[in-house]
Length: 82
Image (cartoon, rainbow, N blue to C red; front, side, top):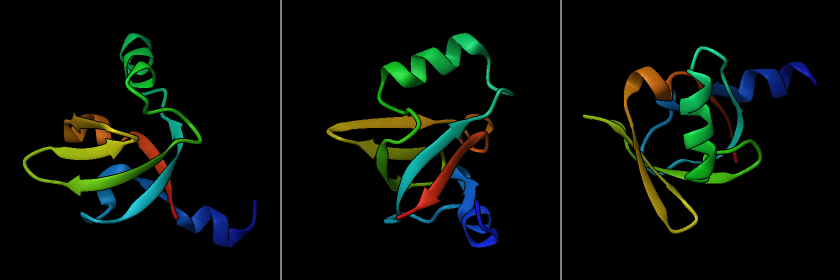
């Protein structure tokens, strides 16, 4: 991984509405059961998403699914801007 790639990896909570990204990883700070639920909803490594809003919760679109995440979760989902 180059320095440029590393710099592009940010928490989901840092992205502005309208930004497209790809899920890179779900941090182990999130409970394993909750990580499984997120993956079941489509929030999985390699999946593209679009940020719809950041406040009061992070709202993302993954395929045809809108998923709302609390900031305490969104800051532990690592993404790369597309």
